[in-house]
Length: 434
Image 1: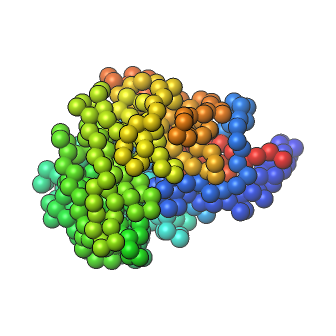
Image 2: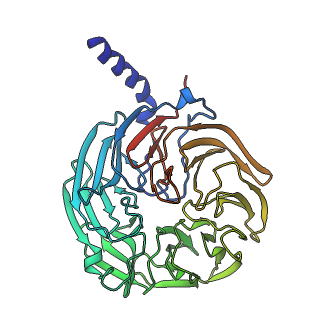
Image 3: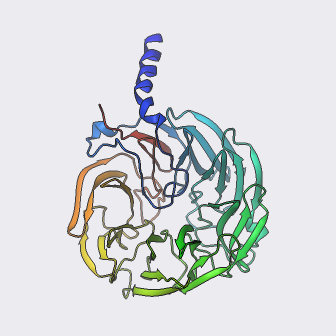
């Protein structure tokens, strides 16, 4: 027994030097919501033996992406039997459960597998947003509730028939003292609440809700929060919610935008399953202009990029993303023309999904069948250096996906990747071996 404890201790001790200088992944798609992982000392290739889990913990169902801060991992899940959502906190090094906060919720949404939003960490505070609109501010150390609001009740989302069919999915965004969310209410499409009290600071737009999360950028030296709503892309002053500009993008069938807007310099790109893609440019006079817009005639005959769940990645003058049935495409960012297409990255199925994260010159990819990949994406094609199945797909079992999927975005922090499905949270060490 004592020998085993010593072995465990020295194993962790070897891991600690890199851990002490590790980066966090404190919100949706990383510290800056851009899918960029800045840590060094990461492996460039791997075998199945190299990516065995450091630890595995049981969790419930949900699409909530893990987030990581101060040596802790946060994730949300759902128990259908109890009609209960939970926010869970684990030790990032050992997987030891630290705390859980659970609350009752009455799901009235399609695909009721669990919460969609990632927990946002701000210093020692955690913010969670449930699928039915329960917004909770907690002490990240012990899980005690600081304040909470039922935004469905407060803004009459269901009562006014404004609840998105798949539920509330926006991951909360912090701006100074404001907590910014897309809620889709009739007179409050986007709201900012005081992050310390939950009191409303401002409300903006009457747009329907989308599943996309807001991002921050700069335009002509001013901070702008970019939100893709169910009706438009809007650029707002994050201090007061006043719109600088608005680009109409009404859905042809239903609000279905899931991917986060991606931004390079003064250009913004969005993509949707039914309605293709658009690229707009922010101008010096705090306005916008359309650069290009591409929509195919249907979900099979697509133009540009008709993505559904995964957010594309923008490298230099090319945009790489997964089309409607899993086709990986490279687009020329200047005009939206397709440079190449590859069908080997994920099985060909409706809503095929791959998540992309950049680390130095490498692109890390995690697909819906639970495969972790590392390689490169260039205007001439894709190269996969390593590819190993690390997690069993079990999310969203339905008549369309009997074998399940892995649709939750992974978190990359502490030289590790944190992945989840509907039953497990897994940590895999990706640090180079000495």
